[in-house]
Image (cartoon, rainbow, N blue to C red; front, top):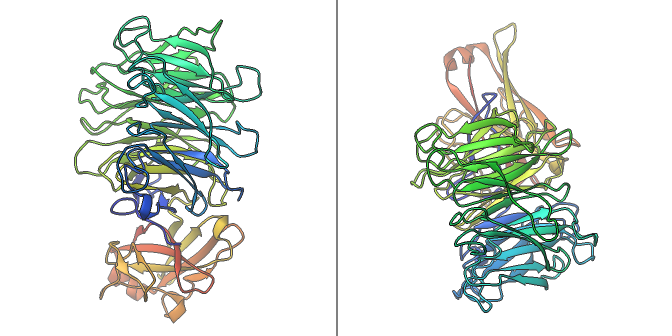
Length: 537
């Protein structure tokens, strides 16, 4: 299977803290038959549904009709293989207009059959009340409904968001919290958070928003490993939610809104190496720099501010999406992933930030619409987590990280004779172990060019009259070591040797290099790295 494109192209890396790009490449894409109805508006990891040892994921098309091609806006959820992208299971909303899937959360095995199950929020669902909302628990094994929990009055919008909690009811099943930002209990527009029994959907606690017209419960973050639930309102405030005492939990203000007016909140809990969590807060229109660029905050759960990272573009909405990265670079610590979108035709930007506040990488999504970001476990066999990225324009895929930043790190040296040696360390992960690799070099840029006969795909490297293509498959004095077989952990090495006389002529010229992985027959490309640029000394 070839690598798939997000929107118009690969997630393109254009900077990193080390001066090398950071590789994010799609491995899976939706079947065109169901890439409609806003497919990609929301996505989440599901755990291992198909039993192949790799995490799978769920993607929603909230505007999809049933059958496909009709438009009642039921909402359809597609569970896909994290390893192969294949469709495993389909879950269909039960009400036209409900636009199921505004929120999705895998809380583990609720039904006891060994397969992770999926909680889904549908805030536009109507039972007896307009937009009362609904939370539905679906079986991960067959897509059947395990339970439903409905909003109890008009306009409550239950299911606007979901967060996990530990087992607070003592039945051995993790519980959850859902938001009702439209609730008027205690005053107009206060909003509410409702604790739900993970096994039955029954309510066992609530927290009423402290301010009128603030829409408490608009966003949430929580974890089953400790009682740490944080709730955002529609005005940019963040609250901590204690476990309910006698059915009632009083929200505690954790972080007030910054200057700049209306600043919606996005939240993510980030595990610490030493145990416990930190809370990442994104406020997409925060004005701390005077230009409404947005801000990403990281706090200890005791309120200690670790850093405040403002956006760099005016009115660009930095922090409109925030997620955990499961140790994307292999350094043993999880990262914070945040995105911005300025609402123009420019592609949205994704930043990967370490917990010390330093920038690990900055990536262009290739899409003008903002992405939905979710952490997902290892789907490639290299021991490192991936990032699930989706777009409401109809795209979704796994963004994969490589140990060397691009799947390939090039080191340039010179020997005593003045020959230039461009040595590449290639890392495609253990899932590609034993497959053959091939390296190309270009001096003509990285726009896609046709490589080889059909069905070989386009690769991000120009093939034209002035391109230098190095391939040991056809021989050549400059590149005798540019192909081989990936070892047991998916690594390989290659070297381009440029004689001193040639290097002098090419001195100062940028070279682009890309690594390819071939199938067992050595005829079809199954993976490519992003191009790496280096300069002839």
